[in-house]
Image (cartoon, rainbow, N blue to C red; front, side, top):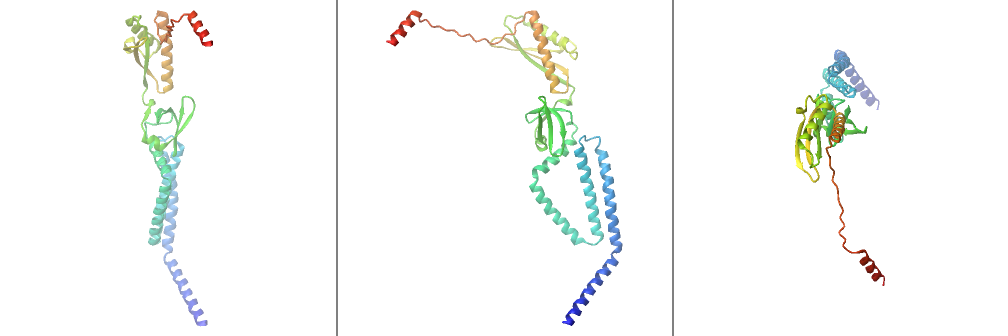
Length: 300
């Protein structure tokens, strides 16, 4: 028993001695690894600030800026960790760490497919110059002002002040109409006048009214006017002209103003804007006396 104890104690002392010698031999590597980690830490801070400055003028959303800077910082620190492990000759540990990170990343990616897709879509949307906060856009059946673009969703405020939150992935995969990319919009007006109207006079009055109402329309010739059909109760026309506008609300206001002024001009000129009339005709040839006799016969 005593011999076994002495043998175990000797093995322990030899093992500790080997560890001590290994530590002494690897002190320079330890110091170098610590320096690498310290440099990676401060380097991550510097790179994070640099990235934030670079994207400052291209991205308005603070959430996107913070996310980008943090991701870059994590990557720099991770690179420093891998270099430090290599300096310490821990190749096996480094391989195991990479394998474990790959398995964990795969599991997380499968579990959070939708979230990751929205995150990357948010990053892509943030770098698109054609979609900016404050633009008036229309997509997936919704129309409104872009209020926010973050890593999860795309926020719109509609004309009725309702807030619509749409996943970034949906925005990226569907067509989007941006009314704010151009400074001009075209107004379409459809109306009809009575068959008794002087059609040339109607055209002249309409074009002159539009030209007087909107400063952007320089002359009546800039207003397009086309008769389209002989309707059931009117001769219908289409009127088109351009205005300076960047949102759907401005377009609606301009259309409303045009309708009001055209109605006033037509009233002053005695031009009729007809509307469908339904006439009910009763062709009952039965005499009142006959109907009374029939009623009395039924009672009998």
